[in-house]
Image (cartoon, rainbow, N blue to C red; front, side):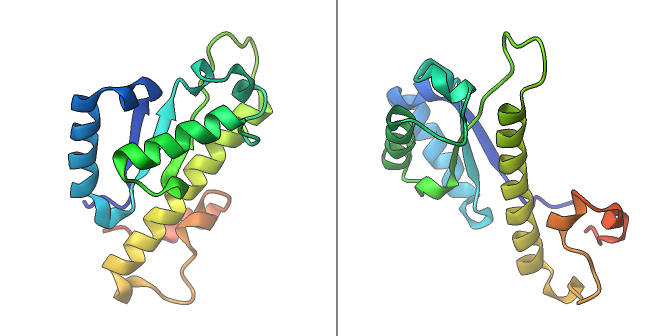
Length: 144
C-alpha cells in the first residue's frame, strides 16, 4: 500500500512554539511530493465566529493562515481550518460542509498523486476517485 494524501492536524498554538514548527517543517518536507495539507485545529479559539461560518473566514482567521504559511513555508492554499463539534447538540450544516470540502480536496490530491504514480492505470472508462465519494462506482477504482 502507498500513501496518496497526507493531512497534518496541528493546533494553531503550535505556530508559536519553535520546536514544534521545526518538527512540522521537517516532516512536511519529507512528504512534500504528495502535496500535503495542513489543518489548523482549535481555530475557534482565535475567532469564535468560525463555528457559524467556516466558509467565510474572518480577518483573524485569514491572518492565522498567513502566519502558518510564513512560519512553516507552506502555500496558503494547502492550509485549512477545522471546526470540531464541541458543545453542539445537533449536526450543523456549515461545520459538516467545511469538513466535506476538506475531505473533497484531500481526495482530489490523492487522485492526482495516484495518477502521477500509476499513469498506466488510468483509463477513460475508470471513474475518478473524486466522484467515488458520490457514486456507487467506487468499487471499480483500481487500488495499488
